[in-house]
Image (cartoon, rainbow, N blue to C red; front, side, top):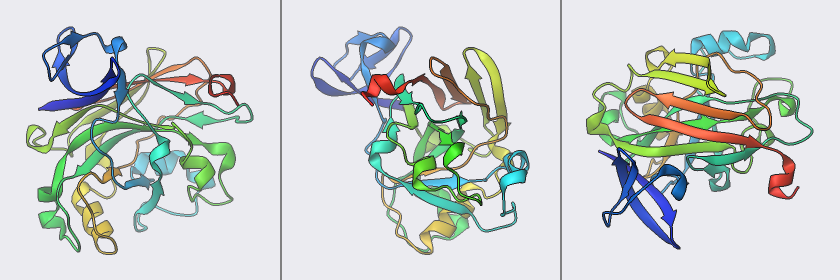
Length: 255
């Protein structure tokens, strides 16, 4: 089952896909553009992975001091970083290189600590599409995603759908694609993760308790390019959904 959360007519609604857009829980059918899309579930801790696809490690090799053999590169994001489907993401006027990152989002469904990789998938409630922008001007001398690079307001688009884990037989065999203004610029497959979902859950739960609603962003393949104000960026993951986002300038945010 695919579900979403939207705002419409002054209220919050659960919704499901419909051939004409989406259907609210009360039966009303609306077009996509008629609602404000929110993250499709109540999000807890946002846990993001860097360099979890070998081809992306190679793509960024000139500025890295880590390799694909190192333990997972993990960082956290605050709730203000999130924006829903069809939302806007600001490109600051002083940035020279800003890129998208199409990522499979893994949503935790059961509380767990020290979860073995073999048992990890039983703790997954479902999946969503994430587009986690990076602002490369703000990187430090080594590749460690700092707050200014990866935790900016509205710079992580999520949605449109939450897809039950039971409806995704193999999350390690999903095609990922990104389009900028209709042009295919990135493609990959979740089969190429350096650390798969089970390994990530085992690693994370060794030092922190995972809770329902926690969101793990699992990394992106190669193919990132600089995006500009006015660009429409579409990130797609097979069986999960198609997430649309638009790049805007400082003036839209009053800055």
